Image 1 (cartoon, rainbow, N blue to C red):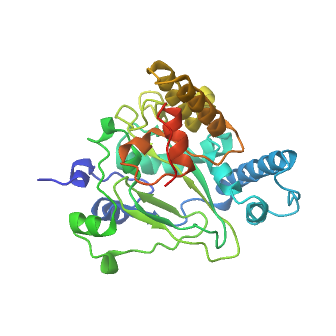
Image 2: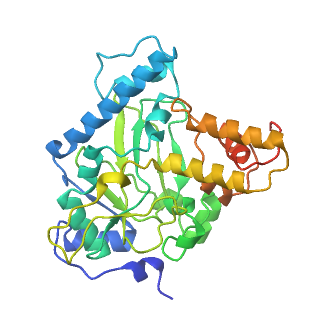
Length: 331
Protein backbone atom coordinates (compact mmCIF):
# COMPACT_ATOMS: atom_id res chain seq x y z
CA UNK A 1 0.00 0.00 0.00
CA UNK A 2 1.49 3.40 -0.95
CA UNK A 3 2.49 5.64 1.93
CA UNK A 4 0.88 9.03 2.45
CA UNK A 5 4.02 10.67 1.08
CA UNK A 6 3.87 8.48 -2.02
CA UNK A 7 0.29 9.64 -2.54
CA UNK A 8 1.35 13.27 -2.19
CA UNK A 9 4.47 13.00 -4.39
CA UNK A 10 4.46 15.11 -7.52
CA UNK A 11 6.68 14.79 -10.60
CA UNK A 12 9.65 17.12 -10.53
CA UNK A 13 9.24 20.49 -12.22
CA UNK A 14 11.99 23.05 -12.64
CA UNK A 15 12.21 25.71 -9.95
CA UNK A 16 14.28 26.85 -6.98
CA UNK A 17 14.49 23.29 -5.64
CA UNK A 18 16.90 21.11 -7.59
CA UNK A 19 15.85 17.61 -8.55
CA UNK A 20 18.00 16.23 -5.73
CA UNK A 21 16.47 18.63 -3.19
CA UNK A 22 12.96 17.69 -4.29
CA UNK A 23 13.82 14.00 -3.99
CA UNK A 24 15.19 14.64 -0.48
CA UNK A 25 11.85 16.22 0.45
CA UNK A 26 9.74 13.39 -0.95
CA UNK A 27 11.98 10.61 0.38
CA UNK A 28 12.67 12.01 3.85
CA UNK A 29 9.87 14.51 4.41
CA UNK A 30 12.12 17.53 4.74
CA UNK A 31 14.79 19.52 2.96
CA UNK A 32 16.85 22.61 3.81
CA UNK A 33 17.14 25.16 1.02
CA UNK A 34 20.33 26.94 1.96
CA UNK A 35 20.65 30.62 1.09
CA UNK A 36 17.06 30.67 -0.12
CA UNK A 37 16.49 34.24 1.09
CA UNK A 38 18.80 37.20 1.37
CA UNK A 39 19.11 39.57 4.32
CA UNK A 40 17.20 42.24 2.42
CA UNK A 41 14.32 39.77 2.18
CA UNK A 42 14.35 39.19 5.94
CA UNK A 43 14.97 42.73 7.17
CA UNK A 44 11.37 43.99 6.81
CA UNK A 45 10.08 41.11 8.95
CA UNK A 46 12.74 41.80 11.58
CA UNK A 47 11.55 45.41 11.65
CA UNK A 48 7.95 44.22 12.06
CA UNK A 49 9.07 42.01 14.95
CA UNK A 50 10.86 44.96 16.54
CA UNK A 51 7.66 47.03 16.32
CA UNK A 52 5.67 44.20 17.87
CA UNK A 53 8.10 43.95 20.78
CA UNK A 54 8.09 47.73 21.17
CA UNK A 55 4.28 47.76 21.28
CA UNK A 56 4.30 44.99 23.88
CA UNK A 57 6.86 46.80 26.05
CA UNK A 58 4.70 49.94 26.02
CA UNK A 59 1.62 47.97 27.08
CA UNK A 60 3.47 46.13 29.84
CA UNK A 61 4.91 49.37 31.18
CA UNK A 62 1.52 51.12 31.06
CA UNK A 63 0.03 48.21 33.03
CA UNK A 64 2.77 48.46 35.64
CA UNK A 65 4.07 45.00 34.80
CA UNK A 66 7.59 46.18 33.91
CA UNK A 67 9.62 49.19 35.00
CA UNK A 68 12.16 49.31 32.18
CA UNK A 69 11.06 48.98 28.52
CA UNK A 70 14.69 48.22 27.51
CA UNK A 71 14.32 50.57 24.54
CA UNK A 72 18.05 50.72 23.82
CA UNK A 73 18.31 47.01 23.02
CA UNK A 74 18.00 45.52 19.54
CA UNK A 75 15.66 42.90 18.16
CA UNK A 76 17.99 40.03 19.15
CA UNK A 77 18.25 41.10 22.81
CA UNK A 78 15.23 43.16 23.87
CA UNK A 79 12.57 40.49 24.39
CA UNK A 80 14.96 38.46 26.56
CA UNK A 81 15.49 41.52 28.77
CA UNK A 82 11.71 42.04 29.01
CA UNK A 83 11.30 38.42 30.06
CA UNK A 84 13.56 39.09 33.02
CA UNK A 85 10.82 41.42 34.30
CA UNK A 86 7.76 39.69 32.84
CA UNK A 87 8.47 36.01 32.07
CA UNK A 88 5.49 35.58 29.73
CA UNK A 89 6.56 38.37 27.34
CA UNK A 90 7.59 35.86 24.68
CA UNK A 91 4.24 34.08 24.91
CA UNK A 92 2.45 37.36 24.25
CA UNK A 93 4.51 38.00 21.11
CA UNK A 94 3.59 34.51 19.90
CA UNK A 95 -0.07 34.92 20.89
CA UNK A 96 -0.61 38.05 18.79
CA UNK A 97 -2.33 36.58 15.73
CA UNK A 98 -2.45 39.69 13.55
CA UNK A 99 -0.47 39.25 10.33
CA UNK A 100 1.67 42.31 9.54
CA UNK A 101 2.22 43.15 5.86
CA UNK A 102 5.94 42.38 6.17
CA UNK A 103 5.18 38.77 7.17
CA UNK A 104 2.64 38.52 4.34
CA UNK A 105 5.26 39.74 1.85
CA UNK A 106 7.77 37.15 3.06
CA UNK A 107 5.15 34.38 3.00
CA UNK A 108 4.39 35.20 -0.63
CA UNK A 109 8.00 35.83 -1.67
CA UNK A 110 8.36 34.71 -5.30
CA UNK A 111 11.04 32.14 -4.46
CA UNK A 112 8.95 30.59 -1.68
CA UNK A 113 5.81 30.50 -3.83
CA UNK A 114 7.79 28.86 -6.64
CA UNK A 115 8.98 26.17 -4.21
CA UNK A 116 5.42 25.69 -2.94
CA UNK A 117 4.23 25.17 -6.51
CA UNK A 118 6.98 22.60 -7.10
CA UNK A 119 5.67 20.61 -4.13
CA UNK A 120 1.92 21.32 -4.30
CA UNK A 121 1.16 22.14 -7.91
CA UNK A 122 0.01 25.40 -9.48
CA UNK A 123 -2.70 26.14 -6.92
CA UNK A 124 -1.21 27.33 -3.63
CA UNK A 125 -2.90 28.69 -0.53
CA UNK A 126 -1.62 30.08 2.74
CA UNK A 127 -2.79 27.97 5.68
CA UNK A 128 -4.69 29.82 8.43
CA UNK A 129 -2.08 28.81 11.00
CA UNK A 130 1.17 30.77 11.02
CA UNK A 131 3.42 31.72 13.93
CA UNK A 132 6.25 34.00 14.91
CA UNK A 133 8.47 32.38 17.52
CA UNK A 134 11.14 33.77 19.80
CA UNK A 135 13.58 31.33 21.34
CA UNK A 136 15.25 33.41 24.04
CA UNK A 137 18.61 32.30 25.40
CA UNK A 138 18.44 29.58 28.06
CA UNK A 139 14.76 30.23 28.75
CA UNK A 140 13.08 28.00 31.30
CA UNK A 141 10.97 25.48 29.41
CA UNK A 142 12.55 26.59 26.16
CA UNK A 143 12.63 23.15 24.60
CA UNK A 144 9.59 21.92 22.66
CA UNK A 145 9.20 18.12 22.77
CA UNK A 146 8.59 15.82 19.82
CA UNK A 147 5.34 16.50 17.98
CA UNK A 148 3.67 16.57 14.58
CA UNK A 149 1.91 19.73 13.46
CA UNK A 150 -1.05 17.80 12.04
CA UNK A 151 -1.87 16.51 15.52
CA UNK A 152 -3.46 19.90 16.21
CA UNK A 153 -5.77 19.78 13.17
CA UNK A 154 -9.50 19.05 13.15
CA UNK A 155 -10.65 15.56 12.08
CA UNK A 156 -12.01 16.78 8.73
CA UNK A 157 -8.42 17.10 7.47
CA UNK A 158 -7.35 13.59 8.45
CA UNK A 159 -7.33 12.43 4.82
CA UNK A 160 -4.77 15.05 3.92
CA UNK A 161 -3.14 15.67 7.31
CA UNK A 162 -2.36 12.39 9.07
CA UNK A 163 -0.77 12.02 12.49
CA UNK A 164 0.38 9.44 15.03
CA UNK A 165 0.92 9.69 18.76
CA UNK A 166 4.20 11.32 19.78
CA UNK A 167 5.01 9.39 22.92
CA UNK A 168 8.62 8.53 22.04
CA UNK A 169 8.41 4.78 22.52
CA UNK A 170 5.02 4.46 20.80
CA UNK A 171 6.05 6.71 17.92
CA UNK A 172 9.33 4.85 17.42
CA UNK A 173 7.47 1.54 17.25
CA UNK A 174 4.73 2.81 14.92
CA UNK A 175 7.08 4.66 12.59
CA UNK A 176 9.85 2.07 12.74
CA UNK A 177 12.38 4.54 14.09
CA UNK A 178 15.60 4.20 15.99
CA UNK A 179 15.65 7.59 17.69
CA UNK A 180 19.34 7.28 18.46
CA UNK A 181 20.29 6.53 14.85
CA UNK A 182 17.58 8.32 12.87
CA UNK A 183 17.57 11.66 14.65
CA UNK A 184 18.72 14.51 12.38
CA UNK A 185 19.98 17.85 13.68
CA UNK A 186 19.54 20.64 11.13
CA UNK A 187 21.94 23.57 11.47
CA UNK A 188 20.67 26.69 9.72
CA UNK A 189 21.78 30.23 9.00
CA UNK A 190 19.70 33.35 8.44
CA UNK A 191 18.09 33.01 5.00
CA UNK A 192 18.03 29.20 5.04
CA UNK A 193 14.55 27.70 4.76
CA UNK A 194 13.59 24.37 6.34
CA UNK A 195 10.75 22.77 4.42
CA UNK A 196 8.94 19.82 5.94
CA UNK A 197 5.52 18.26 5.74
CA UNK A 198 3.01 18.12 8.56
CA UNK A 199 3.81 14.48 9.35
CA UNK A 200 7.46 14.95 10.28
CA UNK A 201 8.13 14.46 14.01
CA UNK A 202 10.20 17.41 15.13
CA UNK A 203 11.28 19.22 18.25
CA UNK A 204 13.13 22.39 19.25
CA UNK A 205 15.87 22.44 21.87
CA UNK A 206 17.08 25.21 24.16
CA UNK A 207 18.81 28.23 22.69
CA UNK A 208 22.32 28.14 24.15
CA UNK A 209 23.53 31.28 22.37
CA UNK A 210 23.42 34.84 23.71
CA UNK A 211 20.94 36.04 21.06
CA UNK A 212 17.24 35.51 20.53
CA UNK A 213 16.49 32.99 17.79
CA UNK A 214 13.57 34.35 15.78
CA UNK A 215 11.67 32.17 13.32
CA UNK A 216 8.47 32.24 11.31
CA UNK A 217 6.25 29.20 10.77
CA UNK A 218 4.64 29.66 7.35
CA UNK A 219 2.47 26.95 5.85
CA UNK A 220 1.26 26.31 2.30
CA UNK A 221 -1.38 23.89 1.05
CA UNK A 222 -3.82 23.44 -1.83
CA UNK A 223 -6.39 26.18 -1.11
CA UNK A 224 -9.41 23.95 -1.79
CA UNK A 225 -8.47 20.97 0.40
CA UNK A 226 -9.41 20.64 4.11
CA UNK A 227 -7.15 22.76 6.27
CA UNK A 228 -7.90 21.34 9.72
CA UNK A 229 -8.43 24.85 11.12
CA UNK A 230 -11.84 24.14 12.64
CA UNK A 231 -13.65 26.40 10.18
CA UNK A 232 -12.24 29.48 11.85
CA UNK A 233 -10.52 30.89 8.80
CA UNK A 234 -10.06 29.55 5.27
CA UNK A 235 -6.69 29.48 3.51
CA UNK A 236 -5.85 32.61 1.55
CA UNK A 237 -5.42 31.85 -2.14
CA UNK A 238 -1.88 32.83 -3.13
CA UNK A 239 -1.77 31.80 -6.79
CA UNK A 240 -4.23 31.70 -9.67
CA UNK A 241 -2.68 30.08 -12.75
CA UNK A 242 -5.50 31.47 -14.91
CA UNK A 243 -4.76 35.06 -13.90
CA UNK A 244 -1.14 36.24 -14.37
CA UNK A 245 -2.03 39.57 -12.72
CA UNK A 246 -3.58 37.91 -9.65
CA UNK A 247 -3.11 39.84 -6.40
CA UNK A 248 -3.33 38.01 -3.07
CA UNK A 249 -6.37 39.36 -1.13
CA UNK A 250 -4.54 39.98 2.14
CA UNK A 251 -6.92 42.78 3.21
CA UNK A 252 -9.44 41.43 5.67
CA UNK A 253 -7.82 37.97 5.86
CA UNK A 254 -4.67 39.30 7.51
CA UNK A 255 -6.69 41.31 10.02
CA UNK A 256 -8.51 38.28 11.42
CA UNK A 257 -6.64 37.15 14.52
CA UNK A 258 -6.90 33.38 14.33
CA UNK A 259 -6.50 32.94 18.06
CA UNK A 260 -9.26 35.44 18.86
CA UNK A 261 -11.46 33.65 16.34
CA UNK A 262 -10.96 30.37 18.16
CA UNK A 263 -11.89 31.99 21.44
CA UNK A 264 -14.97 33.72 20.05
CA UNK A 265 -16.17 30.51 18.39
CA UNK A 266 -15.94 28.60 21.64
CA UNK A 267 -17.61 31.43 23.57
CA UNK A 268 -20.51 31.36 21.07
CA UNK A 269 -20.77 27.57 21.37
CA UNK A 270 -20.96 27.96 25.11
CA UNK A 271 -23.77 30.51 24.81
CA UNK A 272 -25.70 28.15 22.49
CA UNK A 273 -25.36 25.18 24.83
CA UNK A 274 -27.65 24.49 27.77
CA UNK A 275 -25.39 25.70 30.57
CA UNK A 276 -26.11 23.90 33.81
CA UNK A 277 -26.14 27.04 35.95
CA UNK A 278 -25.80 30.80 35.96
CA UNK A 279 -22.57 30.31 37.89
CA UNK A 280 -21.15 28.23 35.05
CA UNK A 281 -22.14 30.88 32.51
CA UNK A 282 -20.43 33.57 34.54
CA UNK A 283 -17.30 31.43 34.78
CA UNK A 284 -17.31 30.92 31.02
CA UNK A 285 -17.59 34.66 30.38
CA UNK A 286 -14.83 35.39 32.88
CA UNK A 287 -12.53 32.81 31.28
CA UNK A 288 -13.16 34.24 27.82
CA UNK A 289 -12.42 37.75 29.05
CA UNK A 290 -9.15 36.56 30.59
CA UNK A 291 -8.07 34.79 27.40
CA UNK A 292 -8.90 37.83 25.26
CA UNK A 293 -6.92 40.16 27.53
CA UNK A 294 -3.94 41.21 25.34
CA UNK A 295 -1.66 40.81 28.37
CA UNK A 296 -2.91 37.33 29.27
CA UNK A 297 -0.56 34.45 28.47
CA UNK A 298 -3.40 31.90 28.44
CA UNK A 299 -3.53 29.94 25.17
CA UNK A 300 -6.60 27.91 24.21
CA UNK A 301 -8.02 26.30 21.11
CA UNK A 302 -10.26 23.50 19.83
CA UNK A 303 -7.29 21.13 19.57
CA UNK A 304 -7.39 20.80 23.36
CA UNK A 305 -10.42 18.56 22.86
CA UNK A 306 -8.37 16.08 20.80
CA UNK A 307 -6.65 14.51 23.81
CA UNK A 308 -7.84 13.35 27.24
CA UNK A 309 -6.82 15.94 29.83
CA UNK A 310 -5.34 14.20 32.84
CA UNK A 311 -3.62 17.18 34.49
CA UNK A 312 -4.80 20.75 34.43
CA UNK A 313 -3.11 24.11 34.11
CA UNK A 314 -4.31 27.65 33.43
CA UNK A 315 -4.81 26.89 29.74
CA UNK A 316 -6.98 23.79 30.16
CA UNK A 317 -8.96 25.37 32.99
CA UNK A 318 -9.74 28.41 30.87
CA UNK A 319 -10.73 26.24 27.91
CA UNK A 320 -13.09 24.07 29.92
CA UNK A 321 -14.58 27.12 31.65
CA UNK A 322 -15.21 28.76 28.28
CA UNK A 323 -17.06 25.62 27.23
CA UNK A 324 -19.32 25.89 30.24
CA UNK A 325 -17.79 22.92 31.99
CA UNK A 326 -18.22 22.38 35.71
CA UNK A 327 -15.63 23.66 38.13
CA UNK A 328 -12.28 21.87 37.99
CA UNK A 329 -10.37 20.90 41.04
CA UNK A 330 -6.65 21.52 41.21
CA UNK A 331 -4.52 18.53 40.30
